Image (tube, rainbow over all chains, first blue to last red; front, side, top):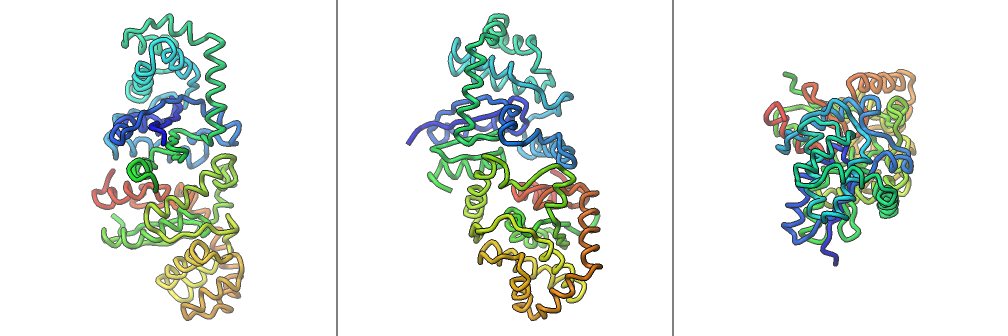
Length: 201
Length: 201
């Protein structure tokens, strides 16, 4: 049995953000290590024929309400961003660059801080200066990160990771895989916890 | 404040079935009466531009797994039907006929029995004889019900009720509305319960 929890998310996904505030504590409680995988739902949706929740009639309006209500219900700080959803390839690439150059732990902190910047502080995380500022607050050279993130190797790495994620069945955010068992959605965390505890649901 | 809980569902929706096994007890606990509204997701999806879960690549396969796992997690009897999803206008019309001719209580029992026939006993609920058999088990004349269900007034009534549901924001199954607060999905029952208890989430 692996000791890993694979956590897939898009930086523009509120439910992915909610999951990001809980996944580390949950995994740690059950002796697991989390691997954080930013993905791009825009790419995934081309395969699945889906679209952002907020773009559907009726469902879109409901979703915006549900994001806020779910945050309140779980006591998670949340402010509806003015621009939503956003393209998140820059944030995802920056995460990969940090992982390669500063290590996995720093990359995880960066993910949490980017989510906070977008869903708590209301910053536009498509903007390089916003991402650079997040990096600077962690004692990482923001300009070097932005520059490095635009490297073709990083771009290809992200594409490749998303392809691999889809071959494992990932189609949404958050998406968690533990011992090949897939969980889609923050609302599956109770089942995820049961699985971590008992090895089955 | 109304004392009602409006419960919208499609007879072919596993999550709608799961909700149907819990909604009455939950509402009763908080002094509410449930109104059961069968809808046709096929009609709703024309407005929302959506499609059955099981028809999407990746998401479809996951959903079939999630239906079974969610049933196990909540201790609800469930057997994946061989034919899924099914057209459910006959079952929905039969419910309306029973409501008009035998009363709301009988209609609710009929809904539960149709769900059980499909998701526990594996019967094909598009077939008139299956619906007639469910009616007969409740001391309702099955042939009269099938005949009455095909009446143009019943057909128009169902169309009209689905239109009204959509004007209230209903776009999926199960969908619950309490005091204008909408809840989509069996996985929102914890939030629904908090709302019934506290008048807010």
